[in-house]
Image (cartoon, rainbow, N blue to C red; front, side, top):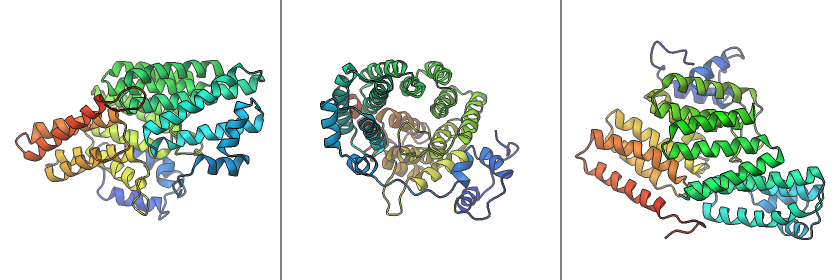
Length: 393
């Protein structure tokens, strides 16, 4: 995959990446894929048109603009079983917006809202619907169930999330929706990854790829597979899985809603690659991707557009800093990551523990090392205190 295999990446490459993104001195079509492959990313990430981040909108904003009805009217129609194509289109928009809210909203509130919508949908499945309408309702229920499962895992409800994942798999299978089935396999891989079962990650990822084919979820499945190989120390299979994912993503159109949690966009792929490069010790590429992730997820006014990505990028930069002997920067970045409110607890703890162990190995007698270790213990206890239903002890 790398074309600079005989030496380190050139200095100033991050600055050059930024210049290319601004449209300055872009190489021609022949060289763009080669440069993207060298940097372990996709063409769109570097040379795509500038895309402004999505403004956070309410569900009603989108419903009124795109379907002519608000949430209240949609709920009333569903309760009256007044199901027509416009109602189902509005329902699909609502579900899509809830999936886009994943990164921004409080996870417990989003779980509650998603479950409420599932309760509204259940009676519809017993109504006399046409086959396409029945499939549309199953699709909506499948995406909502996946969303709830992801949020449950984020908040430490591992057993509940596995049961929810199985339910989503069943809904996707009944609807004939291979994307939902693929994401259910991806959830299994993700849960296995954050609980240290790396062979299970690979089995789930490969089963998901078989089910989903050349859909975007397969990119994320390949990324989870690469992460597992990286934690097993198999650099060759890391490169193979990342390259397959990169090539597949380059072949797909840019998504209409990249903020949808169940969509893979170029920036998300850079996030996966960052994790793998950190683990295999390629600090130059890990730092390059982490810096770009933080830059791209920070709005002009300083708003954090993707807190979870930024948290793991900060931890990656902290690990790189610790490896080069900069304890103060490593500690600062580590605490910044733990202070971010919207988080995937298992993922954050998985990466945070890497920094914690590195600091204990290299700087065991430093007070800052002990302080960060205590912060990690506190974060772990917070996760252990999560209880089913979204509450905390």
